[in-house]
Structures are given as C-alpha cells and as structure tokens.
Length: 440
Ligand SMILES: Cc1cc2nc3c(=O)[nH]c(=O)nc-3n(C[C@H](O)[C@H](O)[C@H](O)COP(=O)(O)OP(=O)(O)OC[C@H]3O[C@@H](n4cnc5c(N)ncnc54)[C@H](O)[C@@H]3O)c2cc1C
Image (tube, rainbow, N blue to C red; front, side, top):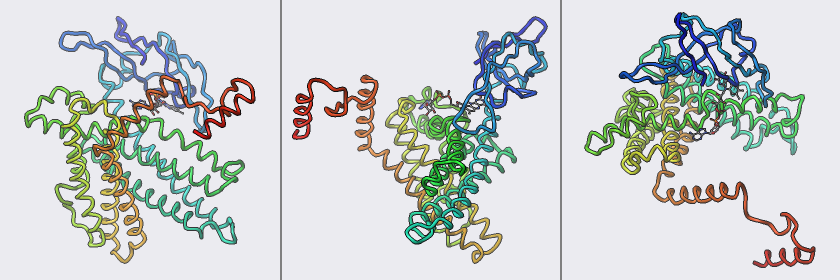
C-alpha cells in the first residue's frame, strides 16, 4: 500500500504504486488508500486513510495499462504517486479510518458485481435456450436432450436463487439495519460462480462454435473469469464468510469456560457477527418464524435441520481445533459453503413465499418448480460440505497435504514415465524399461 505523510501545512504527500486500477488512466477523480501514522495509546501506528485525488495533482503518473484475458471494455491502469501533493481537505472520512471506508466500498462493489453476474446469467440462459432450440443434432434440437435440459434447469434455478439473495442484500443495505459484509460476500461468491458455470455451459452447448469467433460465447467465458478473482478472490471470501460465522459461537463457547477468548479476537475480520446471525438474517430461529405455504413445508423442514447442523458443526469444529481453526482452511471453507447454501435456500423460500402471497399459489407453479429444484440441489451441496467435516475426511485432508508437500519439494509432477519422459539410454534399454514398467 502507498504511504502518506502529513506536510507542515496539513496537506499530504503520497508515495507508492497502484496496479489494476479500473480506468485509472482516464479518471477525473480517484479514491485511493495510503498508510498514515496515527497515535494509538501513546504509540505511533500505521493505519490506512482514504484520499480523493485527481490526475492533475503534481506527482500523479500513469505507467501504463494491462493486456487482459477479458473485460476489454474497461482498462486497468498502473499508477505511480511520486510525492503526490494532496490538499488537507481531500481526506475521505477520518485519518486512520480508511478501513471502514474500504469495507463500505467493498459491500457496494460486491453487491453490484453480484447483480451484474446475475443479469449476465439471465442473458446466457436466454442465449442457451435459443441456440439449443435451433441447433439440430441426431435428428433433434439440442434442447430435446435431457442433458441440455438439465443445464438449462439448473441455471434457471440458480439464477432465481441469486436474484433472491440480491433482493435481500440490496434491501438490507438500503435499510442500513446492520453491516451486510457477510451477505455481500456470500452474494459475490455465489453469483460469480454462477456466471462462470453459465458461460462455460454456454460454450459447451454451442460446441465448436462456442469456442470460436464470431460467436460471442468465448468472449463471455473470458469476461466471466475475472468475477471470481476481483472484489476479493472467492477463496479469500469463503474464509471471510467462515471465520465471520465462527466468531459468535466461539465467543459463546469461550464464555462456557475455555481459555479461548484471546484467540477469538483474532477471528474477528469484522466484529459483531455470529453464526447465529446467519439464522437471524434468514428469519430462522430454532424454527422458521415466517409462515410458509404448505407447498414449501418440506423445504422448511430441511432448512431448520440444516440450520441446527451448521450450529452444531461450528461448535464442534471450534472445540476441536480451538485457535488452530484459523489455519484449517478446508474446515473453514466447508463451514462457509454450508452458510452460503443456507442463505441461498432461505432467500429462495422467502422470495417464493412473497410471490405466493402476492399472486396466489396457482399463479406460482413455475417459480415453485425453481424453488423445488434449487432447495434440493442446495441441500445436497450443504450435506456434501457437512459430511466433509467428518473425522474420516481428516485422513483425506492429510493425504492432500502430503501430496502438496511432494509437489512443492519436486516443483511439480514427479512420477516418471519410461516412454514419455526424457530419453535415457539406448532404444533397447528404453524398450526394456517400458516392458518392465508394464509388467510391474
Ligand atoms: C482486471 C482486473 C481489474 C481489477 N480492478 C481493480 C480495481 O479497480 N481496484 C483495485 O484496487 N483492484 C483491482 N484489481 C485487483 C484485484 O482485486 C486483485 O487482483 C484480487 O483481489 C486478487 O488479489 P491478487 O491479484 O493480489 O492475488 P493474490 O492475493 O496473489 O492471490 C492469488 C490467488 O491465491 C489465492 N489466495 C490468496 N490468498 C489466499 C488465502 N489467504 N488462502 C487461500 N488462498 C488464497 C486465491 O485463489 C487468489 O486468487 C483488479 C484486478 C484485475 C485483474
């Protein structure tokens, strides 16, 4: 991160480099962050501060722009602040409080990213439906085949879920009831993975044409790829979701008597969250409080069971790993996956219930079909993650670690093949080696 030092007149000098700054080379105004020194308990500490800068300020330089795989309609710039002179009144918020500004920006960014991905998934589904209807193979349109139908059905159901989650998030951010960072991260992860699957399946449905220009499908695939990386890589966001969810139960269990309070403080990427919050956000206590139509009762039963499962699993994992849980990324990732599926399921139930209340159940058969398919699928994903918290999976995780250690030590794949690898010896010697390898 860049550094900012305060000048005698209260203005600031910024120094450092920023890469991947969206449209930074042609922006009129840029929000940027730099480390500043602040006094904390009588000690000097470095804390980020947000600044507003303009390219006409002395010391602002554009080094260049990047060549990319996709999203070529926007440009990412490489910027240098070479003693950039920033007036005192260009501090955004308070000195040393840049993290709060960044979190706010990120919540909005993740919401709009998720909205863009969900809109993109709708477009893709429309294109897939049109393409599969007109392309005839084996005497029938592709759309007649069950495998194509499965692709369309799942994309439709997941788009419905993504939109339902977005509705809750957008409303929540507008109502400003509490910090929505957890839900914003969930929406970002879910929608970015949805658009990736959708564009991948679109290429597949279009076959060879999907891979080539002038059809737009290969570009859509390239454009979709970045969504899982920027605004926080999905791996990092899953850790954020998992650790945020852990914080509350860890504190509760700590009060029961273990000496976990100090480590708990380290869980706090953002304070004030709890796994119980997941339940609260879903409108779920030990049972779902909102009255649901009988057509949704079966899903409610599973949702309630899964909420209890997540709570139990979270408690067990905290007790088992204590502060080491931070290092157990695969465990945290599984808890995050469970939370994502619960949030998605409850959003789908809530949206479908609202539609039933508005139109009557007879007018909602098609949306009920989406809800049914999504809830069943989300339940499977949930159980898959829950089952992987099983003690037996520890052995598999240990194997993963062993293999990764060898890959690291060997800097890659290490098993040699007598025929394909670097020729050693005469042709007869190699033939002999190959014969021995094949006969064991
Ligand atoms: C096209 C584009 C546009 C961008 N626009 C902007 C912009 O406008 N403004 C801006 O500030 N930034 C922007 N970025 C930066 C972007 O947000 C980062 O590239 C992204 O957050 C990932 O950070 P990184 O590239 O440093 O990857 P790294 O931090 O090096 O991570 C690489 C990979 O490692 C894995 N990983 C990282 N940390 C962990 C961990 N703790 N545990 C497990 N796995 C981990 C993840 O899979 C991750 O994808 C942009 C980037 C690109 C490519």
